[in-house]
Amino acid sequence: MKQLWNKGFQPDQLIEKFTVGRDRELDLRLARYDVQGSIAHIKMLRSIGLLTQEELDLLLPALQDIADSIERGEFVIEEGVEDVHSQVEFLLTARLGDVGKKIHSGRSRNDQVLVDLKLFFRDELLRISEAVERLFRRLQSLSEEHRDKLMPGYTHLQVAMPSSFGLWFGAYAESLTDDMQMVVAAYNIANQNPLGSAAGYGSSFPLDREMTTELLGFANPHYNVVAAQMSRGKTERAVASAIAAVAATLGHLAMDVCMWMCNNFAFVKFPDQLTTGSSIMPHKKNPDVFEIMRGKCNRLQSLPNELTILTANLPLGYNRDLQLMKDILFPATTELIECLDMADFMLGHITVKDDILDDRRYDYIFTVEDVNRLVLEGMPFRDAYRTVGIAVQNGTYKPTREVHHTHLGSIGNLANSQIAAKMDAILSQLRHG
Image (cartoon, rainbow, N blue to C red; front, side):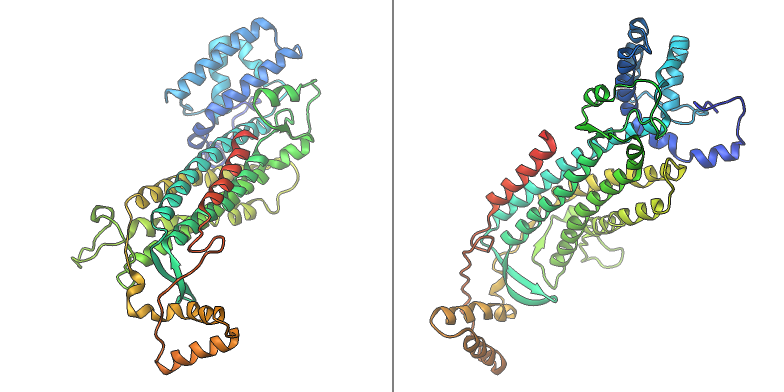
């Protein structure tokens, strides 16, 4: 196997297979960032005299050629090559000879992969934010469209008080603003430059870490080189927490839709072609999309715990256990975005039932409205509560079926514009610093 750390002997092939794992496959997602980091690094090496201008002029177009092959989908990590870092360096060496061997001066695979991961997670978090925003806009649009359609509100899964589809859709929109705060926090943790920390203890070369920070667009460096290496694991846990937060909201929404599609509720429905059927029951129209979404989101919520357990008892410095985090997180970012986009697609075809609360089964949902009406007419609250309660117990209660909610965030005042402004401010933090 071609390895950057080769010292004249080859480890047993069984050891190689076990330790490399899925790195070749997963590292393809890091390839563009590895080249990006290398370009910044060699520009810095030239600035401190470790490369000549002539060598830089050879290396830059060669690295750009590799970057172009990555964008065309032609880049591969060859059989027998350990990882993406090795592949890029071997390609340069094959093309340029000894000058290709100079690009690793002043860095280790430890800070090299950290740079790759930081750049990767920044982009993935931006992609997640874009998918969240698409769903957020959909939910806000539906909230406005169905703002006057009443539905039951529940506590303990018992009919409680009037709600509305405007409130329901809007609630999930605002919940996503909270989740986006987690995405922003994870982005800020990822947006720090570890390059120059080498194996975790710095370098005797006079590296210009401020220069690579600027070239790579990081907000600032990880100043302490040991702290930079300690960020491996911390960054992933922050990203996992952000993913889990979004997944929690989305999984909750999926559960609601599964319930509301059930015949016992029948509050919402979707076109037949967006449902699935039964092999034995010809009438079935199942919410399989939302059930799969719910399951995937529940699984995504386990990510922080899985990463915490993986990294909980590791000693200071790099340990190979950290490689396994790629297996956990790389598929997760893709899966979350797919779930968000599927939710957006499905909700674009939702049909909401009208006049749900006209059904007599929901008569008692108006009891609080009638208690409040009596209070507004001058009756003390406890007397009004008892009056309506006795009528319910005696079977003589007759609802007025009137709803008058006007305060901020209620049925009659959804505050969607304020919620949109909150989301816009959060997105602005993420995209403009």
